[in-house]
Length: 108
Image (tube, rainbow, N blue to C red; front, side):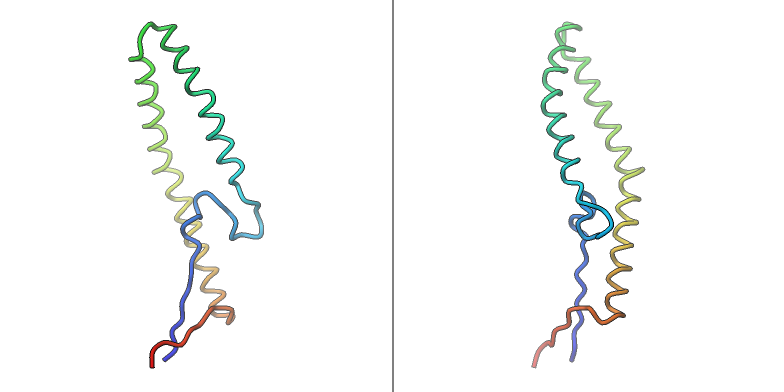
């Protein structure tokens, strides 16, 4: 009995386009933005607390940023990732029909 196996590039689909020959990887953009945020977040938060005299305003800004990130992830990133996964599945199906799929024989 022949068993066909399809491996989909689902794990890195949100942060990389390495499975696509059309676009270069975007790891540089992701890690540059993380680095800049780590460099500027601390000093900016400290400056805001010094200017206002307490940390409560800083925490409210952090809460607003977290909520904004969550809403953007649900409203924008989730549909984009869904379309990318669907495209990867279509590509795998196209590979399957063209005969470039890895096949293995199972059990005796």
